[in-house]
Amino acid sequence: MIKKCLFPAAGYGTRFLPATKSMPKEMLPVVNKPLIQYGVEEAIDAGLTTMAIVTGRGKRAMEDHFDVNYELEHQIKGSSKEEYLEGIRSIMDKSVFSYTRQIEMKGLGHAILSGETLIGDEPFAVVLADDLCISPETDGVLAQMVGLYKQFRCSIVAVEEVPMEDTQKYGVIKGDMIRDDIFKVTEMVEKPAPEDAPSNLAIIGRYILTPDIFDILRNTKPGVGGEVQITDALMQQAKDGCVLAYKFKGRRFDCGSVAGFVEATNYCFENLYE
Ligand code: G1P
Image (cartoon, rainbow, N blue to C red; front, side, top):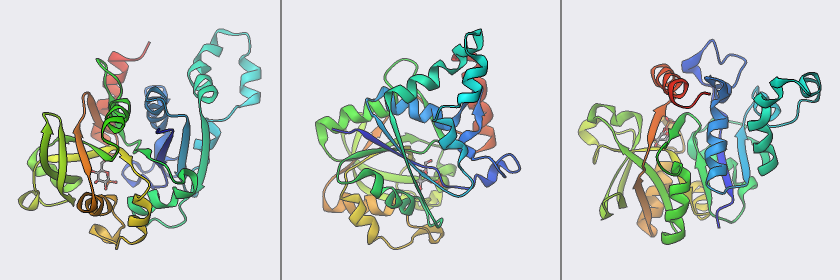
């Protein structure tokens, strides 16, 4: 079954400069928790136990976050402040973290391929921490997808409908509906202009991938933006076998943009913060 979750987290986060000049964008706090911690919590809720993080130069704050800080913990021991660390403590008790570095920035497909050494030959989940997903009334998005994987045993991408003018920000799919919320992918295009988009169903940053994706990625030529695109590799997988697109239940905030980040912050402050 699926035990590992890959977090491509080597990007520069230029849209948040100067905040991200010396701090990883994944460490930007949404209220009082860094973005990546929301993703890790979603993975743990889906039953995943190994967090495999593809990191890069200047991003060591992530490793320190998921580690003990003896001095700080000693200082606040016995005080009411200890409770602020309970969440992160419980994450560290429930999961193992492993890291590798993406040496060159050659796209999301390349980042995922860099993670092969941490994943090996088994199906795995991928979380793009920029997409913050909240499903207050049901299981988290990854848990929904892990459930589907048990049934279908193939790669799955999470999708949502976006306004047609936004298709160029996403990978966009077309497929045959096999349930009101599941499509068998027949077409998949990375960042199409609205007039070229096969639909308005956009891929968001949650994937379940079968390990044959690594061999496909090794042979995938750079696509849009000169980068190796996971979307192109998945299209190949869909041609050879099966890839599903799943309209997830819940809300997704685009924390890769300042506006989406502020929206997520307001939502989390009003609905989740105690
Ligand atoms: C990446 C993927 C794209 C996907 C998006 C979701 O793009 O390449 O297919 O729709 O994540 O957030 P990026 O946002 O890294 O440009």
